[in-house]
Length: 245
Image (cartoon, rainbow, N blue to C red; front, side):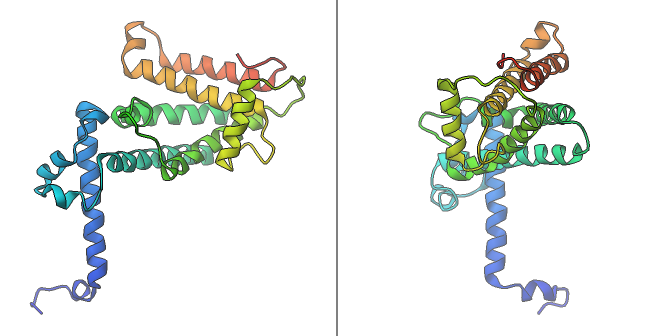
């Protein structure tokens, strides 16, 4: 053994070293892939170009990811997991606040995360290549984010309200909740909570899309004020007797 060698390195099993190097290579591939997406969107993703940038042959890089969609799926899954972690951390930090304030904290955390990395946000919720669908791992990674949102809205919608017949959207939402197994809305989901959860997310996404595109700035509109107004609408619908707007 060389005099300056680290005994701990020689003691490391070969399998462990190979696995560590594999993880490093996977991370480098995904880093290059994110750079491509940032420059040209999901359509710009190219395994051959990544391999060339890393000094790897085409067949070599395909040993790590069998297709472009596999790389895309890995990026999406990682992004979903990041967003879920951000919202869960925000929720934990606001545990002593009122449900209404917790909803504001979640929305603020969502917006802060998205505006800090707009390319990744666009990858998660923008146009995907034709034929791409999120796999089970990606869906599982984002499910926690919706669970936090639904639990918070459910805590707001605890007061009595008139019963109304279920409509087609209610049935779709209940099927969606059943397909996920757990949605944060409990074993017997309230269609109103499901509806407001999805509406809250679509309103957040719509506002962020306009903000990131610069359209709200062109209109001289404050996205923070718009977000507050949207949340007030959701809270009113959750706590009041009326139907969601």
